[in-house]
Length: 426
Image 1 (spheres, helix red, strand yellow):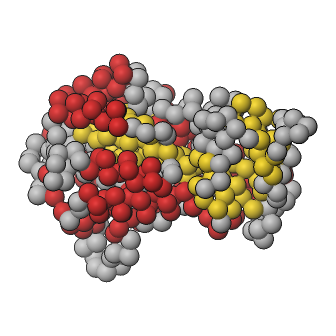
Image 2 (tube, helix red, strand yellow):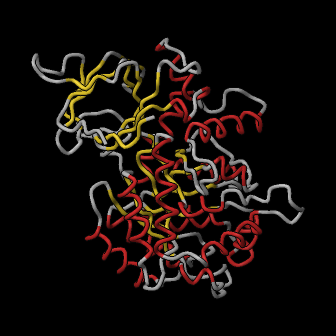
């Protein structure tokens, strides 16, 4: 791996937040932190790492992933029978869970994280609930080890999960690997802090209101607010979740989040919101609640198209990882809204806003807003480099971002760096 820590890097064009400028130089220190950006950063006799005809974007941030789901690639069963649905797919996923042990989860996660890096993803929020192997919570370390060995920054979204439905039913056999009560979960979360390495962080999640009681969701949200940790939760991915929640509480999951969790003032991310009402989507945005959309997974599983509104604070995730491409996620997000509304201008989803969704917004969702998301002094030097010589891209700076977002692909990525360490070269 090439290391640019303590050096000056120069590229033909670098994204500055409002456009491309170049050639520009970026200096980072020995910890990978940006210390200077400008046209003439290097001293007269200083070595410059010249990236040539490359254009740099901030590293992409994947706000929602289940790394082990990638192992199911090739087993989609799409079109196999009328019985194929999200719920049938979930049963197939549980069969994968049953055979997971430490080594397998490490292997599955390592392959996923390496593929993410090749897609320009430098930070991943791993929504992790498969905790137990031969020992309780030992599988948490399998995911962290895989991320470290791949070279990706990980935010372990440590997930509470202990019941099988709103009626409080017991977990199925495979789900027993997820199970922990509130106090046991918090202790495990606190214990794991001492094992985190460079570029490893942890935050919390309640899997869903289906899998965690409202009272414990409130406790966890209050705890996360006091600990200054973000909290994530799956919300209304399927109509059945809304139907069951209404039957047992008289409210929808998003109603309960808005009335019971939002008042704590925590940094909340609601994942999916595929069937959330327009009214509640507006309220989520007004309450500063992030919405993580996973368009390729939602299309793959037939979840539905979320009702995006002007107020939505959107970030993006690869979720089941059947296909790993942030650029394709962003296009799917945009084109599905165009199709749904018979319109080519939906809430300003242009190339610049989509890049912010994949960087700045993802950083905010994961609590990394002071660490990554932009090229700024004081932040980590994470970048994804695109090859300006690609026939799919445009060399004109005014057209380049649009060409990358709407016409580029993983194959146009030539180099990826995390904290000043090049972890991928094509």
